[in-house]
Image: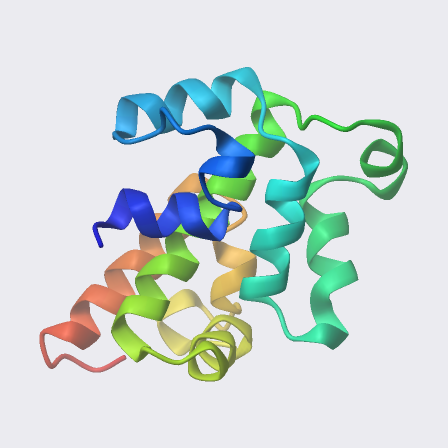
Length: 142
């Protein structure tokens, strides 16, 4: 499975994002068009322990907006995809959902003490998290 397939699977699979999403360009188009709200639900379920799911969902989309809309805005969709991407990378490295969640939710010194999940709420923060994981893959301190 490639990274795009893993991200699509975390977003709810082709049933949620559409069967035509096979490339980065396809995923970008789906994000720009707005992902369904269920994509956020699936990502939150995969990325967060049960006690933190409401907090994460509300950080991505305000509660009132979440309740009112069935489709996420392009901005909320981009954040949802970003969290899915970081989670997919961590799943690939740790091969265990609990270890992935522990990594995402534990403050990290290389992220100025922020939790990786919080850093991943912005594009630059997500890149920082990806760099931390990549350094770990190459035997550097994580």
